[in-house]
Every structure is written in C-alpha cells, then in structure tokens.
Length: 116
Length: 115
Image 1 (cartoon, rainbow over the protein chains, first blue to last red):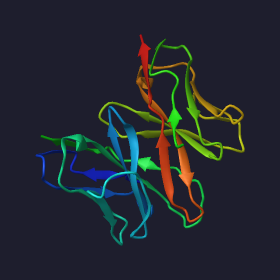
Image 2 (image 1 turned 90 degrees about the vertical axis):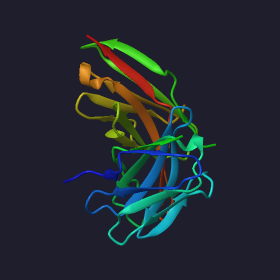
Image 3 (image 1 turned 180 degrees about the vertical axis):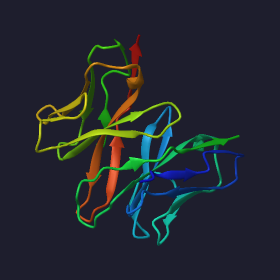
Image 4 (image 1 turned 60 degrees about the vertical axis):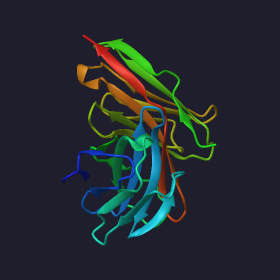
C-alpha cells in the first residue's frame, strides 16, 4: 500500500507570495492533518480535515488555510508569505473514524518551503 | 497546558548497547501516546504506540513504558544498530469525541549510534 505523498518536495518563494502544498493520504484514510516543523518551534499542529470538513485547528494565523477534496486529498495554502514561514510542512493521514477513537497518524516526507 | 517534553536533547550510545529515551507529558487526561523516528530528510515514521490502560508495550527491539503517576514515557531500544541513528519524538494524541485528531509533539531527542 502506498504511503502518504506530498508535492512538491521543495519550494522557494519570496515574501508576500502565496503557496499551495498538496497531500495524498494512504488509500482508505479519510483524515488528513498538517504540521509545521521548524528548528525553533519543533512540530506544531496546523489543522485536520475529515470528509472535506476542518475538524480541528491549531494556533496559526488566518494566512494558513486548507481544504480537503472528496477523494480525501488535501491542500494547504499560505498567503502573504513571511520569512518565518520557512519550514518543513508535513502531512499525516489516519483512518479518521467519526467516533473519538485513538488512531495512528502516518506521515509523508514533507514539503520544505524556503521563503526569501 | 499542552506540552510534551523530552529530558535530553542528544544521546550517544555504542552500537549493540541499549538506549533509553525519556519523555514527560503534561495532560493527565491523555490516553494515547506514540513514538516516532525521524531520519534526515524524511517525515516522522511510526515506531510504537501505547494506550493509557497499559504500562508497557513491546515491539521488535523496542519497548515503551508509561508511568501515568508521574506523567512519563520512555522508549527503550535494544541492541542498537547504526540505522537507529535519528531524532526520536514522543507525541500525545488529543482526540475529541467527534473524532478530531491532534498530535502534540515533544522537542525530540537526537540518538547517535557510535560504531
């Protein structure tokens, strides 16, 4: 079974631009979560989507947004990029049952974003 | 508050020795914990998990211990190999009754295996 895939793997943008990152979950997984990883802040939760709905959101400004499609693929968008947005953006998927079950999240390789 | 922390940022062990990586968490209501391994240039890889109704779980060469009294987790790796060199994260899974998932990660420990 293929794992979580993310595209692109690397991106270079300049301040003020916007960027869209893509994530394809493991087949059959309906929940997709996004995380930001930086040396200073570590791994931080951005948001989680299930059945095209955002179920949970972390403490990030409104410049960070996402969406999920009917095939469970997800995109996240960062508008008006700042230097501090340079990070590894990780996507994780899980089965995402509707009840409060504990589930393992499996990560993709990440998209490394550099903002100049 | 939401925080999962690690006691040691780096750890070096000799190949073949056992290693122990520690983690403290703050939410006493947490009931599911996961250890991930992250190699350079890759995303976190699931190693082992444990639920709060257990105090020990074993996998292949890895054991996770959970002490709910002091809110402490540890990951034991037996007979370490060069391929075990990586950064190890503990994570606390927050889930709502509606099923919303969120992982809160520790800072990570860099494990180096010396030949």
